[in-house]
Length: 503
Ligand code: BG6
Image (cartoon, rainbow, N blue to C red; front, side, top):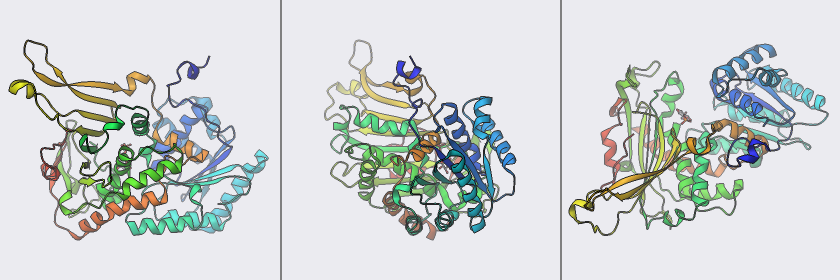
C-alpha cells in the first residue's frame, strides 16, 4: 500500500494529471526565480508531480548559454530548496534546459523562443501545452504579452497556452484597469493566472476547509456573534536590498492591497456553490464590493526607526541603503474596514502590517461578543473574556480557540484557556511551498487560487483612495522602534474597548 493510501490526510503528495508542458520563465535569472520558482520546480520534480514530459526555458536579458543557465539554476536549487536535492532528480530536471537571452521588447527574442518551443514539440511528436511565467519588473508584463501575441505564441488549436503574472498587478486602480485591458486584448481570462502567493499557502486554503467543512463555526460567523476581526501580517525583516521596489510601493501596496485583502475575503465570503474557480472568485468579489474605501480617520501609516531585532542593532528605514532620507513611504499600515453586507454590517475588520516588528506572524483573530450577563460574582467574573478564535497562517500554523474555564479550587473563578490544533503535529508532514501549488495549478489550468480581473480591480478600488490621499501628504511619518510592537498611534483606529493583540 502506498503512503498516500495509508494516510489520506497527508497533503501535497497527490499526483494530479498534468498535460505535457513547456514552462517559460521570463526573468529567469531574477531573485524570485532563484529563491522560489526554480526550487519549487525541483520539489515538484522530486515528488513526481511534474508532467511526464516537462521542459523549462529561461528568458532574461543577460547573454549566456544553455549550460550556464542550467548551472545557475542548479546553484539556486541547492541554495533554496526546502529539500536536500537528490542528484538524479536534479540532473533529470535540468538536462535539457534552454536559455533564450534578449530584451523583452525585441521581436527577435520571440522568434528564437518560438524555435525552442517548436523543437520541444517536434521531439515530443505533439504540441505541448505552454505556460509563460512573467517574473519580471511589472512594466514588462504588457510588453511581453503583446509580443507573445504578435509572435503567434498565445494561441494553439491543439494545446493550451497560459500566462502567469507576478505581482504587483498595477500600482493604482487606473494602472490595474489598463493592464487588464492590455492583457485581455491578447488573452482570454481563462488563460491568465494572476499570482497572489498567499493563496498558495496551505493554511490560507485551510480557512475555507475550516469554515465550510465544519457546521459549528459558520452559524456564528456573522454580525450577531462576532464583535470584531483583526488581521495581522507582521514581519521582523526590514526591506533588505529591495529599496528600489519598496520605496515606490510601501506597506499598503506591498501587502495590504493583495495578501491581506485576500485573507479578508476568504474569511468573510459566503459559501460558494462549489470550489470551481469562478464560483469561489465571484463570492470573493462580492465581499470586496461591499467594502467602502476607509476615510482618513480609519487609516494610519508609520515608518520604522532604528532599534534591535533578535538582539541585533538595525538601522531605521530612512537610514537604509538607497532610501531617500526624506522618504514618506510607509513600512507600517493599519486600516479599519467594514464589510457592508447582511452578514457583516457593523463588525469592524482591522488590518495591520509592518516590517521590523517584534516577530514574524500572520494571523486572523475573530473576537466574539461578550456573554450577555456575568453570573459569577465580582471576583469570578474578572477572568471572563470574550471567546477568540485565532487562525494562525504562519509560523506555528494552526487554529486556537480561547474558552473561559474554571480555575480549580473552592471558588468559582474563571480564566481563559486555549484549545489548539497545530498543523505540524497533526499532519506530521512539511507543507509544500506556496509556489509549488500555484505552478501546478496554473499548468493544470485551475485558476481557483489566482486573482480574477474584476477581483484585482475591486481590491484597488478600496486601496487606491488611500494611496492618493497619502501621496498628497509629504510630512514626515511617525516612527516606531524597530523590533517593537509597532506605533502606539495605531490604537486610535480601534473602536470601543478593542485592543491590538500582542505580536
Ligand atoms: C511579498 C512582499 O509579497 O510578501 C514582501 O513583497 C513580503 O515584502 C512577503 O516580505 C511576505 O511573504 P511571506 O510568504 O514571507 O509571508
